[in-house]
Image (cartoon, rainbow, N blue to C red):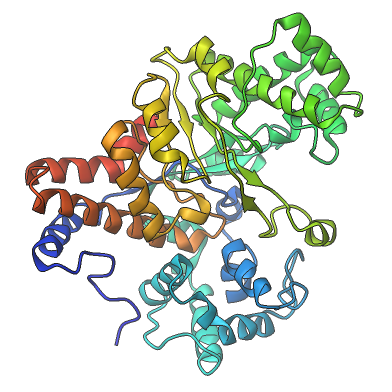
Length: 464
């Protein structure tokens, strides 16, 4: 008995399934390029064992505890937000007894992949098998083969990017570099805490940025210089990309004297919502300018109403599974930035969306024209077989394959990385097999495209 079928996600029709199998066989063992995610560099710097199954599978994965919370499971009972899980077996039993909630979700595919491929489990997780799973996983976590670095190598990860604030010391990245371990783990520059006035402690963090860089961040010029220096510090440790998680895709290109006046108002801590949005918009354009100068690829992840559940935010903090997609405008919002930098072939801006209605109407036409634009893969709520297939169907006709950037896992849950990439590879092979069997793409071309979607496009877009 196996938890996963070998032909999962392939077409039901036999001739297309045969092509999908052949395509998948050609790319299934390619190295993983993980150019954007939220794993912790400290895991690999210290290389200490993961403490227990609950800490590994439940605590860091907002897909998991979000679903449980939606069905009335207490976040306190799951010990979410705690620095250490004190009752991991209890947390695991709650998770196991509610595992049926994940039927039909991508989380189920990812979890079953890890359970089967890493821990050799054959019987489905449930209340009945909770302790069987816990004991088997815990025992393996104590072995050298399951230390973070050993798993990184076992997963065949060629390069992995984490995501850090400009204020991060990057101590863990330095420790990895200085250890002599040959793995490539690089930071990504996420400036949101010092460009978004809605962040808690925003003004204090700008002051800290000034102290860290030796710049006067009470002035517009000094603030921009501080960001340039911070980016250079990241780049020195292998960073190749920035990431911007703004509520919208709005950009602006104000005259510098107006931008300076806006900044002066922003750092008083007394700006209004419109001024905060305009400042974020201006900073996307400033970041594009900096990327053109220092070569860092720019990612824009807009469209999430973050921390929608006020009670959860106030009690547990940010990023606790209460983020909700919203409609997003790209055509008008990006125009100020594109008017200035859109025709620069040396600039790479990767656009993501949580608004699928924009794929064929806005994003694919934009990326299919502007040299600086590329489309990121189906993201977050749509990092699913159905979401990936909708993405390919809606963007390929206008943007083609080569204005996209392959796949990134964007995960906090380290053990889900190979599972997520496997799902993406299977879905892409299923899509390509359909084009082949419909005589829209020759088979030799499909093999080339499969390789690019799996490996080449991500390396190129993220300069890895």
